[in-house]
Length: 265
Image 1 (tube, rainbow, N blue to C red):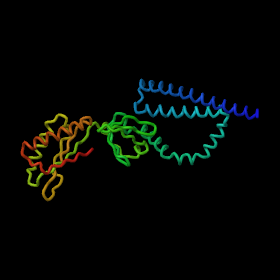
Image 2: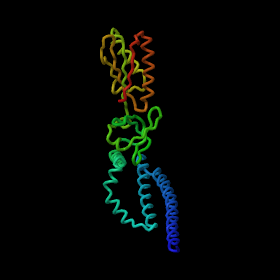
Image 3: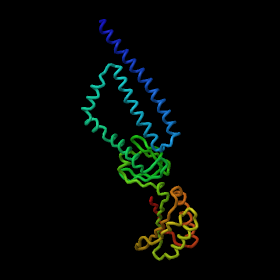
Image 4: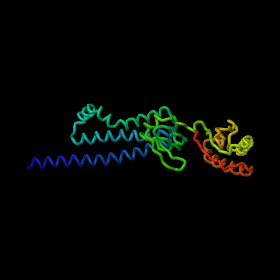
């Protein structure tokens, strides 16, 4: 009975020490991560790397803490490593999506197709357009034009077609207008060109492009394409729409067939 009591007391003591070690270790890791974040904020390291670095180091710290706790509990960590190594294939299979996201994160950081603050479009298994807020170890967060937060796994991100509007600095706005078939096309083109040239946000180079896109039985469509700085995209798109509507009405051009499509380019 004495031996059992001593054994139980030993186990409880080891568990208490392990719990205390975990609490102290967690507090120390939290403090170190906060210090690391401040150092990164003051450094010249790209802001896109901050979350990736801090989360990667946190994972390393937690692994080290786990090994220390297991040793304090009297477990043979070398045997544990051997078992984990033997089961590595099974673990890799179970965590293939997570590992793919981590690998995708590394590819994003190495190739740098975008950085925090860039306006990008993702086209793949996920379609989204927005400004990048954070590049994490496994995910990239971005907010859309209607202020929704979109979280995209890095594995998906690295396998998608990415368009970086900020990197190029300019974007193209495409609009399509439909008119009655007998509409004076020359007059419409003149009006649209005048609207584009009257707005200082429309770039003169490349020049606006206006032309008949298609002709149907009772209507025809006119394509109107022009360029602007990436930051002006939404403001200009709405403003041009207002101006075109107003000028066409003033010129008594029939808008009864009007239909507008706005495409991200």
